[in-house]
Structure formats: C-alpha cells, structure tokens
Image (cartoon, rainbow, N blue to C red; front, top):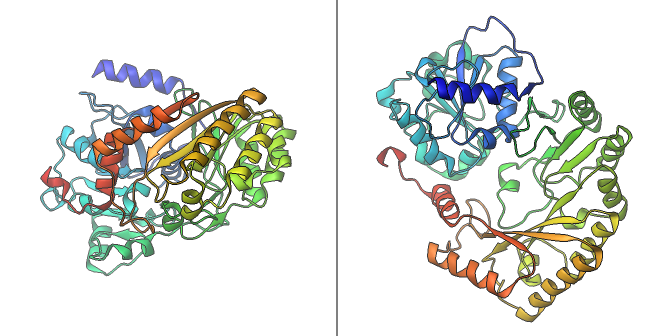
Length: 456
C-alpha cells in the first residue's frame, strides 16, 4: 500500500488544482476511470465532473485511476473503494465497459446490482455508454445520459431513495435511467445537455503527466456541422452547441493565469463563428494554442496564419480515405485537389507537422487505385517541397450504432491485419501508425452487443 501511496503522492505533487473544494460536504463519492492516470487526467469530461461535484459542494469526490495495481486506493484520500457509499464511472469509450467490470471484481465489489442492494450505489455515464449501455444493465444502479450538471444534485442528498423513486416512475428526470429501454433507439432521446448559456467546460487540473502536458483545455462546443456516415458524434450530440465567445475568452483568461498553453476542444473548432476572434485574443495574450482535429474545408489562409501565429506546431486533419469517391460518399465533400490545396495553405503558413486520419474499409475505398497512388505521391512531394512532415493515423472502419453504416460487416482480426499489411506495403515514405486490432474488435463488439458482462 505504501508503494502505491508514494506513486500517487508523486503524481499529485505535479498537479496544479484550478478550483477550491467546498468544505463540510456530507456525501462522499469516488470518481472511477478504468484506465491509467495519464489517460484519465487527459479526458476533459472526467475533469469536468470532478471539478463540478467538489467545487459546487455537491459531494466530496475522490479520484481513482485503475492501472492494474494490487493496492487499489484512491488518489486524494488513499482510501479503499469499498469505503465509499457511491462509485461514479466515467466511460468515454465502449471498450471501457470491460474495464469497469474487471475493476469492480478486483476491488471485491459485488457486480450484480440486485445482490449488491446499492451497497455501494454505482453510477455510470460518458459517451462510451450512451449508444449501448446494455452490457452493464445488471451492474449499474443509475445511468447518466448527457451532461451531469443540473441532474444529479438531489441524488446525493439521498442516493438510495432517489434511485427508488426513479425506478418506480415516481420521479422522472431526462437523462437518468435505472432500467434500460427495450428499444435502443430510445436511448438517444435521453441524452441531454446544459444550456448554451452555461460556462464552457474547462480544465480543473494541470499536470505534465498528461497527453496535454500543462495545457488548459476549453470546450468550444458540442456536436458537428457535418453528418459523416461513419461517425457517432452527430448522433450523440444531436443538438449542436457553440459556446459564447465571451465565455470562452473568460475561461481562456482564467487558464492563462496558470499556463500559456491553451487547448481548444471541439468536433468543429474552425466552424465556430467566433474562432477568428478567439485566436486573435490568444495571439494578443501571447498564448500557445493547440486544437483538436480540424475539418479540411474549414481551413482558410487567415485562419491558417492565425493558427501558426498562436504557436500551433502541428495540426490534425481528417482526410478519412485516399479514395475521393469513398470519401465524398462518406460525408467528406472535398476533392483530392482541394485537399492538396488546403495542405499547401497550412504548410505555407509555417505549420510543418500535420497528422492525417485515415479509415480503411469505407465502402468503395478500393476504387480508383491509380488516383489514390497519385494523391499519396502528391502529398509526399508537397511535404518535401515545403519542409513538412506528415504522420498518418490509420484505423479500420468500425460500423457504429445509429449511423448509416451500422449494418456494415466489421472486418475480423485476420482481415484487419491483412488490410494493414497491404496498406503498409503499398504506401510508404511517411510515418504510419495503425490502431490496435484487438481494441477495434472489442470496441465494435461492445458497441452492439447485449451480452451481460456479469457472465464474463
């Protein structure tokens, strides 16, 4: 135990807490992330829940990140999970449902909710659940769909009584379920969000032990203006929300008291109507800006210049497919020539490192082989002529629930491996990284399966 306590203490010493906990809170809870500290602390959703519950005085909330250690103690109070009356799971990916079950088993907590009798009460939320929570239907006492704010405050006053009222139908709050509907399409109706007038979610903790090392993250909005046929974002976030520019700038100014590194998070960064004003504000404050993946058609010369002037050393673009026909059919309406022009625009702005997303297995992506070869060749020539470096992140198509591609067959393990090998053999001259085959297979299985994880 002391070894693990020392490890957690060293991690905490590297943290800067950006909010104050309220004292004298009556209810204790543990916020669980079934993966490493590095992964969990990099997830803005986890930080948002942790800050919200503690800063608002709703529940004295500790953190737990699972790293397969034997001494399973929480990060803030070094307590065993069995000491908490409430356990809250933050699940950003469907594959984490497996991890949640394994974590509970390792902590010797009864999995079956009927046998456990809400001792402790287990709550779960996050995008990894919203499309298919059924594998955890007999484990979780309360499912949260959408944002936690303005939903769970009364729960912490009387957790067991609250759940009984929800379960009996006496109390109905959109986004809170104790029983899952038979028809999964009803789940989307449960996903609700805070008002556009609410302050934008932002970092609660800064640390170098994060994917976004000492970077203050600010959410610009939810949803997506595109409707790509393989993507769950426009299905989960069915209400597009752009945060107010004034609120975003206020959050950035707050974060800049602690760090010069600002991360702008959204599926539609460049589509935000105030993005130029936001970037110009960051430039005026001499802040270094990074962004989540950018839409190709959202790039223009003024924005590319601003991205460079605010310290963007690299950007990420979603090309999705080397096949123009497959790309356009999937919802990316730009030609090869347009993509090359946007790449050149970015390189000319001074940004030299570009990460490019590709999906293998989109319908029709084996067509026009010669044109695909030419696009690859033209990209490498462009990089060489402008002193740029391209890095490709390659994933198999994972058909997902509620998308137009949900009924497509998922490639099996051998097919994915063969597809990866063929791509690597055919295309060379750049850094190419492939997603884990096992993670892709497991993610697809858990996105659709109604298997009861109690049986595993």
